[in-house]
Image (tube, rainbow, N blue to C red; front, side):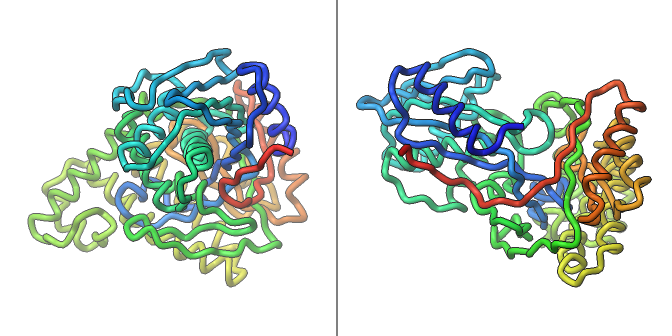
Length: 391
């Protein structure tokens, strides 16, 4: 794993090689894991994400014209676009997230100037750790820096989300972007995805979060992510016929949902049932962590995974396997998939003194039981996006 500092040095070197000049600074945007509240953000519900100490780094320098040049060694490619010619028609490649962010900021009236950037990351793509949101946020921070725009974490999170929704074409919620812009060290964010107000939840030292990457990759654009959103919208439409106040499943309780059951397909009902019950869990988990009721916290993680597996049907054999293996280790209090699903990562709540043994044991068991190469790390919550000037 690259440390944050080595990542800084590497992206600086790549910028110099690509553009034959020094960058003025590097923006570092962290990824995130969602502790609980999965597939609730786009129903304006509650979520409890925390940042992780894995980053997308963007080295940058201003230009005297209105061009954007972007380089990444991941694909050994440099792309170039005019700021004034950007349109929300994605190309289906990595640069969509960069150009989409510039487009969204330009559309919002920010007085942007041209920029050269190089991108490097130690945040694995497709692992459910929000590498796309981190890239958008790092790009937004770089553009704000060179264009001398005011940085507002919530406004920029909204623009990054717009980039992903309208330019990239993925109907994500707002959680990932807010976590990357507003995250705080040693804290999770209890976020209301309707009001965008959040409460910092101090993470207790007695337990830690272990991130378990199954090694299975997925792409939101090619999964059933959008199908689940449509199922939720269908449920809301049915409920609105007798409960007009229900603008999203966030406004629905189990009693209201039961009244609509006859109007919904079995699968749509089950999708809505997950969201309605899952939306209660972020507040419960925050309370359990703050009060030291770690057994209850673990049970909430287990219940969330079961709901995602059985009702929302976004788990995978590898996610089920890795969480089962995690629960079999004595220091584990609970485990669940995190992110959109269909692959990617899971998390485990583990007693701090047992984290090293837990990682060793589960890594060995997963290697024996799966054909995929998993990876594991103890996630540390860090501050949100930052800019480090060159010295």
